[in-house]
Length: 405
Ligand code: HGY
Ligand code: MN
Ligand code: MN
Image 1 (tube, protein in one colour):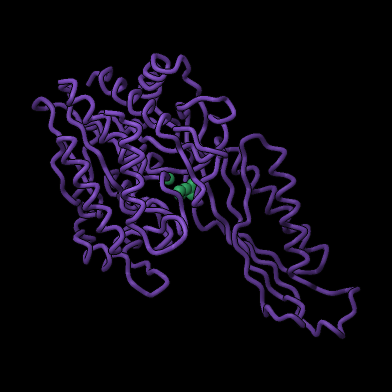
Image 2 (tube, rainbow, N blue to C red; image 1 turned 90 degrees about the vertical axis):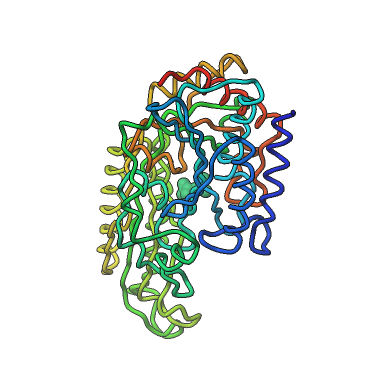
């Protein structure tokens, strides 16, 4: 079997489980998700896994090892962003299923249990939260998330229950860390490093921490034609100065990323001076201390810009996730397998967050990255080659063979 070509075929097949949009749009607890789970369940079955849906809506494929052995968890998220690519998340479900199928063909019986997990919701696109499936296994879900609603007013808990999950029972699926070997996630890199180094796979050193802030500038509105330029309290001009200052400052800190991804004006009229601007400031960094220092610098800059123009300024953190180091044991196992197949074991950080971020509260985590064309992701242009996925499957299979419970 050409495992890489089979991976490409499966990813093409499941890309059809999408809303009728450009690229892939597959949100949690939707008809598209149900169609995808039917396909994933078949892959799990072909890999010799027993399949069930857990209370958080994760499709779980499990093959028990010798009695009393711990479980190695693998997998990633089945959901996508709107107009996303064919690889983000779902590649991490396809490749471990094929690696297990390859080992079965070779008559290899692993000395531990294995699970492949297809998480319902990592992106947090439909509901204003994320990682509910992986957090459920780690026991870190805030029950309040089930009252969050999507843009049509549907409660997440109701959508999960209607899908076959059990919001009230999520606390019962927490895993016992003593019975878990670790979590191994395979994911398209979503960045340019492996392509630049001309390598098919890489080993992740750690997952960046992330915080999101709600920022507000408040000034004075007025008639665009009568208020003199001198002395205006234009909230959008102040926000513009803030955004470019943040962009320039972030460029001076290696591996730190700062992004203003959304903005809303008031009164948002062509002939009125904006008196209020609400924007989001997202900050990511491999080191939490760098992220905290940058957030303090951003706050000071915003306060200075606002006070120089006689405006109001507020910056409130709305989301935070600490940086996660990958397990030295899993990094070493992946590196040894990658070296034997490619002669390389490039180490690189992940600027994107992943389900592994949440599962690090349960067990050691490791990540294998697959080369991403042009570093493009969260886009229909996202692409990973069959050849590179074939190498990743070989590396995964070797890594699994080498793990000792
Ligand atoms: O935002 C992220 O890094 C991930 O793609 N959800
Ligand atoms: Mn993503
Ligand atoms: Mn992802």
